[in-house]
Length: 271
Image (cartoon, rainbow, N blue to C red; front, side, top):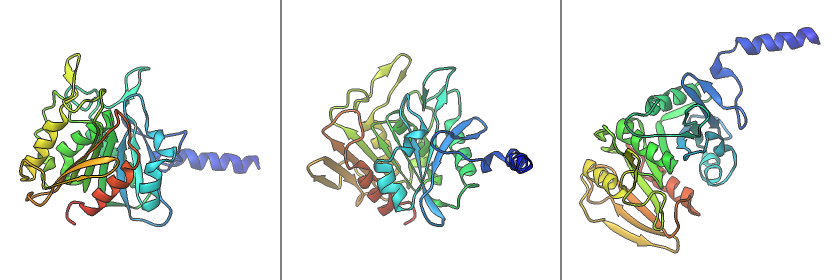
């Protein structure tokens, strides 16, 4: 029995990092950081949602159930959650602006490549999303590498400043912004914090419309009991741009995951 135990241990140590077990308590480790991964039932190839956590959060949040599990995982999506960079013993986050200590865009695709050694992923259906600082990171990823994405949704985050990106990646990329009318943490106009700025929701939506040839005023305005939607699609010669506003503040509103998945799957790049 002892010999069998040593043999199992030796095999485990000989496995490459990509083949080691990782889960809710133990993230998957790669050069430059770590990530969490949840896989749906059934064989692949699976579409992928890259999900960025907010300031002081971590990727383990995808293991706690909720809307991401209900509306993405149970509908066949793999959910990949990179862990934000941590300075010393400080909180994890995504600076998502010039001067960041890690190239989080490059790290994201390194994590995606590593995840591809664990499961069969459909790289033509890779979507990005995030909340708060993670929403800002989703915008940065879309701006810099949107050609590698099928769609993007940001919740309560905008493209931060200073930021050298020209947002060329927004051309042809369906994007959706979900934001609380009463959000004081990340207001629509953004706010200055020391030597940087959260960025303006209005400004990044304007850049997305310009990249996709959309007119200034929306093509459709819809309202229900939770969301007020402004949609640019018919006038665009590229991809649609959508803004969903809810009455709440800085948070994830009820029902956002179902709306996000419907938008992403219904408008994916190239569909």
